[in-house]
Image (cartoon, rainbow, N blue to C red; front, top):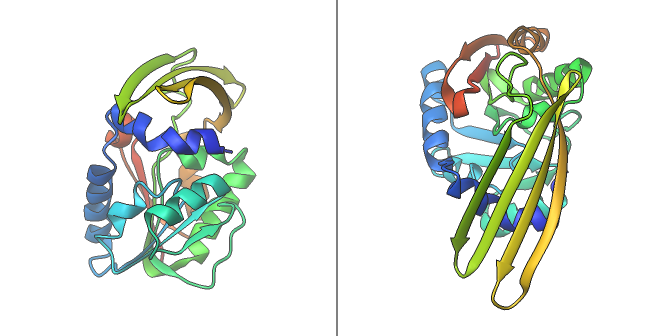
Length: 237
């Protein structure tokens, strides 16, 4: 789970790597509204610091977020004081509300540790959809598209602070393990180093589609989006 150190620099480092949260939110909204033209409410599950949510807030009448990491919840609430952001686990959450759209972005669905948890997660999404609602899921890599042993490195400087990120990702059975090292430096605090380690499941496309259907959702897969991971759209009856 993401800690306080990463929360502080999360958006900065990913935006420096070219991630455009606003463009992703607008593109996803356009696709959702082809299925549900009157969609007015949205729940962003695993919303992190609210980087996508702040853009969804300008595209929908009512938005809410859900996030397991409490440091990220606090950051999202600071950034979006008028938006409800709930502490909760995507596999088991239960809110007293339904939405026209439920989103799960940035490959966060891969934190479901096995197929049973994937099914539980999509069932939770379905329970929170209005009739005719849409679940939009940005998946993690499929086994056949995952690059075993992938290394990436990035350095960015903003507002007097420099952040370096180096990651290594390796296959571990049906999942991958990604170890990430960060160095953060500024003139006042000097340099500090911390690490994060993540185990992320490598579900196949058919596994995702089976889980959508088991949750009672029709499913469509759109390739090429989100760093070529694609996008799943699940339609509630």
